[in-house]
Picture 1 (tube, helix red, strand yellow):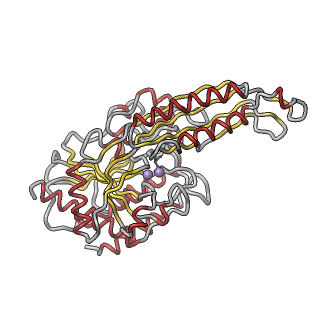
Picture 2 (cartoon, helix red, strand yellow):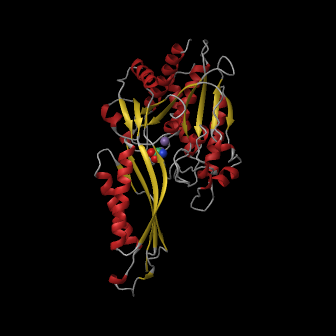
Amino acid sequence: MQPIHDLAATLMRRSDELAAHTEEPGKITRRYGTPALAEVMGIVEGWMRDAGMQTRRDAIGNLFGLLAGPSDDCPRLMLGGHLDSVRDAGRYDGVLGVLSAIATVEVLRDREEPLPFAIEVVAFADEEGVRFHSLYLGSWSAIGALPPGLLDATDADGITVRQAIRDWGFDPEGALEGSLAECEYIGFVEAHIEQGPRLEVAGIPVGVVSGIVGTRRAHLDVYGTAGHAGTVPMADRHDALVATSEIILAIDEGGRSHENAVATVGEIAVRPGASNVITGGARISLDLRHPDGAVVDELYDEIRTRSAAIAARWKVDIAWRTGQKVEAMSCDDALSGALAAAVEAAGHEPVRLFSGAGHDAVAMSRVMPTTMLFTRCKGGISHNPAESIASEDAAATIDVLVRFVDAMAAMHGR
Ligand code: HGY
Ligand code: MN
Ligand code: MN
């Protein structure tokens, strides 16, 4: 068996290798259905096979590797993460979950004593939702909960999810049916960088996740009147960008007015987008989050009320395009307890922390006991190319996952 530190060094090297596969040279960008994502899926599938796993792809393009258990219909323990990314991303978001799961299998595969269950490693094909503005396409599809209407959502080029699945060589109708095996799943555990500073501040390499915030996404279209920047008097303007700017500030204020809430405008597009033309139209994205879904709804209503008043004042029209709403989730107590015991057995203080970031664990928690292991990341930086982890923290992650699997084996009749 390879020492854990060697496996961690391999994980770091593999993360660097995957980082080179991108839509945007010099950055890391891998959206659903792109050649860059297809490339890394192929590479990771090879690593899964090298680790002794049988592999398969499902109808939306998720990748699964199976380390067989005592029988074909035996229970499965699922580990994994996602291989898509945001734009100009870091190299560990999602990838750490997939690669640490493969490393864990490489430890387990060499064991004399078989496990009483199979290990299934998943690499989801779209967690970030960058292309279609919808989180968790891969994991919703895997659990058979992809909303049928989502197949008609379009990307910036007007391509539907349905077409993108087909273009990638997969099956859009099949993507509605779910792709988990017909067996008992004893749980899903996702290792993921914390994407926040708490573990680093506490001086602890790993932490157990207690729950994940609820999220709500939308787009706002602002309709003004394009005009000549030199000839339209200020008092006669219907400037969509000025109105949008004030609405963005109102959104930010809304996020600050509710403790533990966050409100973000990450996308903006203006029409026609010329320096000597008064902006005729604008579109912005909205991302709201809070541990309590009712607060997310309250905040959304407040923002819509304020944006209507701002639009009236600037003599523009607005239209909200309500998007995805995902309820908050609490991690499974028993699974989290076993994970915390594994953290402690590995020699670390078993802290629990709440996730402000969304994860596929939200979807998986709808169908099986689910928890997450956070790994310390430098400065808490993520969704940023400066995202980084230490190899010894990758080693701590693998060590805890192996101990966790052993604990689950003891609980399930090894
Ligand atoms: O948006 C999120 O929280 C996650 O990174 N998809
Ligand atoms: Mn992310
Ligand atoms: Mn992620």
